[in-house]
Image (tube, rainbow, N blue to C red; front, side, top):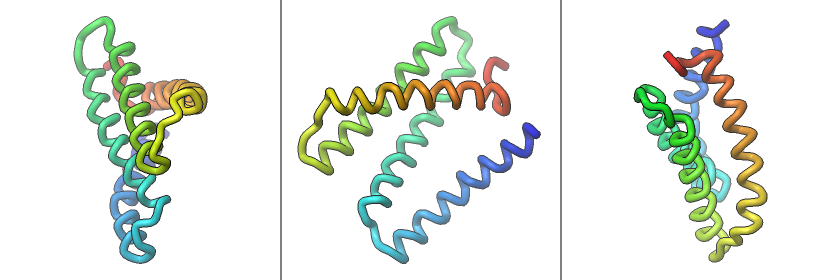
Length: 119
């Protein structure tokens, strides 16, 4: 089951890399596709931050959470600024923080289940 889930997520990731440019060529670079590209870029940064798990140190989890949170808040602020011309920090934090916590917890346990965490 572990290998099946790994294969599914790898093919979804590779499919995204192929499918998004095809959508851009077919439909143009609309607002939705811009958002998707921005979050794909953030996902690359999240993936790079995953290398912290290989470092032998006691505070790697808080450091990883902080880096991922900084990436998330930065992307949300930049996206809000470019879309609206202003960043409403209070509503941005009220929406982003609970979602970030929930997604981080789910992904943490998912990666422990099928990934290489703590190895």
